[in-house]
Length: 197
Image 1 (cartoon, rainbow, N blue to C red):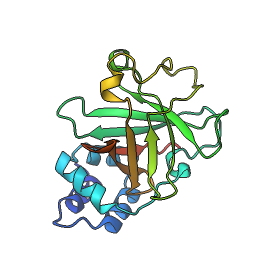
Image 2: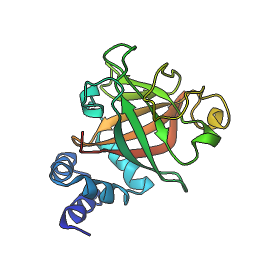
Image 3: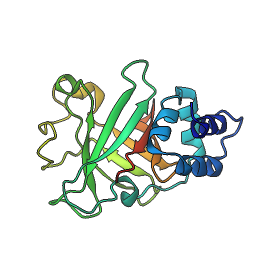
């Protein structure tokens, strides 16, 4: 384990998370170190981190830095589920929707069973949080992405239908999210934007 990963985990395991010190440690780390550290974030730590990040806004620029339409930006994810904890959220800028929105899907090996979980994403003006909204699906996608299908189809009606993920800023590359279906769910996840973008 590198010194950077040890430092991040040490900050996460303090009685109170110093979100500003954590931000610096994450910004100083490499992409591989950020991913390695967040893979160790348990459900309890992710819940605490979401609370510590309250009020920290996430912008479209942070989530999808490129302005090129349909250029993929990958965020490596770790969730609090008991199994299948690793996934990716893949975003891009659209060419046919409003310019202040993004779109994407959940990249997992199980998309043919659950659906790809397509969404439209945007910053919520009231809270500053970044909403990943599965109640709306895009009408276009990069050629390499799976087919667009309603989130109510297959097992998507259990996983994605009616859901909105709300993201808060941790650092330039890292966000912490919580899932909502009418009310907050006991489901959190941390994302690390691939630093090639």
